[in-house]
Image 1 (spheres, chains in turn green, red):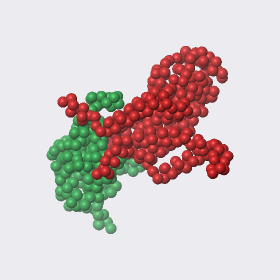
Image 2 (image 1 turned 120 degrees about the horizontal axis):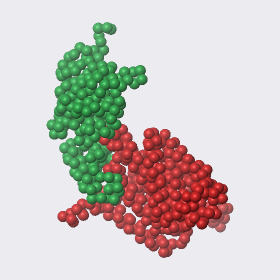
Image 3 (image 1 turned 45 degrees about the vertical axis):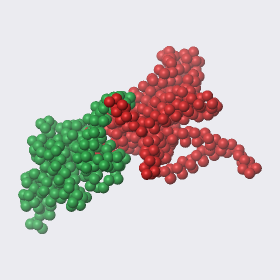
Image 4 (image 1 turned 30 degrees about the vertical axis):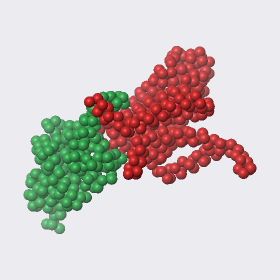
Amino acid sequence: MILHVNNVTKNFGGVTAIKETSFSVDRKEIFGLIGPNGAGKTTMFNIITGNYEPSSGEVIFRNEMIHGLKPHLIVRRGIARTFQNIRLFSSMSVLDNVLIGFDFQARYSFFEAISRFPRFIGEEKRIKKRAFEILDYFGMSAFAHAKAVDLSYGQQRKVEIARALATNPELLLLDEPAAGMNPSETEELGNIIKKAREDFDLTVLLIEHDMKFVNQLCDKVLVLDYGKTIFEGKPSDAIQDSEVISAYLGDFHHD
Amino acid sequence: MKRVGFKMTVKKDQWINLSFVFGVIGFIGIANSFFDEYTIRILNNIAIFTILAVSYNLINGVTGQFSLEPNGFVAIGAYVTALLLVSPEAKQYQYAIVDPYPFVLSLHANFVVALVLSGFFATCLALVLSFPVFRVRGDYLAIVTLGFGFIIKIFAINYPEVTNGSLGLNDIPEFSNLYWTGGIAIIAVITVLNIVNSKFGRAMKAVRDDEDAAIAMGVNTFKAKTFAFCTSAFFEGVGGGLLAALLTSISPDLFDFFFTFQLLIIIVLGGLGSTTGAIVGTILVMGGSEWMRFLDEPMKFFGYTTPAMPGLRMVVFSLILIFIMLFAREGIMGKKELKDLFKGRKRSAK
């Protein structure tokens, strides 16, 4: 067990976005977080990454409580994320985007950078080499010096995942990775995620609406509706569960 | 082995920058011995404003934190340098409003120490200021920093025991010359470029492009902003010191909001985020506004003499600014640097 969300509740004023939700993600699992719009999925992501503090409950990552920590420190402990709407650094090259992920791993001080100390040159060389390795892995090293915003949507999504992997995470959170992609791009993405799990020893937690994608990819899913857990288990069972169906399509019996 | 390492570290970009630096040093040498006093004065101004613009651009352009405080830091640098350079005897009769504190009279140091201390004080203040200032983003940041600039000026007026109030400080020894201003300008430009081309500069740009995404990459955005702010304050302090030792007299009125505004024009005109742009902007604004002085004087057109129109120069200057901004929305250089221009030429030649 790498991540354990224990009895988390999140209130925004009078609105309860997440109510007493608990789940655990095992090491190297691909875990899907699904549910209709407004179910609290992205809120859950923001709680895990430290952008929100839970109103009550706890988030445990590798046996340490991480809720209440600053977001950038949670990243350094090994939780990386991508965004629902791709958020690359628009003025920077693809290589620089990936190098940002190495920001806290490059060990030289401010004054070593100003004076171009040997350690600066060595460390820059080291992280550039590793950035190229990750870009190579995604077949993107040919675009290293292109501006990130000039790439196609699918390529940008790859760069975003590459950038997240540069932070050397154990847990990768993907917020609707297949959104806006055509079926062939979606399939490619699924294969990349599966392959990266093996090669980078990753655990993946993802939000997704594309049920076919979820069904093919996820080992386990959690279905949220209005902040409450309505199903936890295999994705193939989820689409046959009556409560899940009524959450998505409405309840026919009380019409 | 050694030669391979040398080849890998000294790249073409660095050769371009290096030859540019030597070009500037050569130019300073020539200017000092051949140009008249008026031209040298303008060059001094350009060099000092290069220091200020390049460092202001680090926080405003590179880090994207729209702040309006440089007049405050420049004022601090100018006052620290002035207080350290004016001899105790000269101070005795300058303080006409009230008697100065005894420690003010005893302050005395050489030029280098004065400049370093100017930068040091500005940096310390920036460090303290960064805690409240970077709690807010965007427009709010601009207002908070604007307030700081005003506070420094008001402080200078209302604290005559130290600053001699609105009379200011006079008889500052004229230590600034082209070697000092030009040399420090080169140091400032190299320092800023080295920061921009390191993980700190990347973090600053990431903060500018998308602060939340930067946090999600493990970047300590507060640290990135504070580094930019303090570096900028250091060079603004040093620049203020050079300015004081160039003008030989300073008063609070010199450091009002117009000072910041002028720097803002320079960096926006040159291209926010581009160090090369900041230098180009300085040369155009500082040099251009001097060159256009002939517009204020009576002119002859085809035998017909127009009367002198003081202020015409600023009208024309503003019009030129408007036109440049209309046709180059991101400033003259955009976000490009000197090396990018050479790359662009090479690509189009193929």
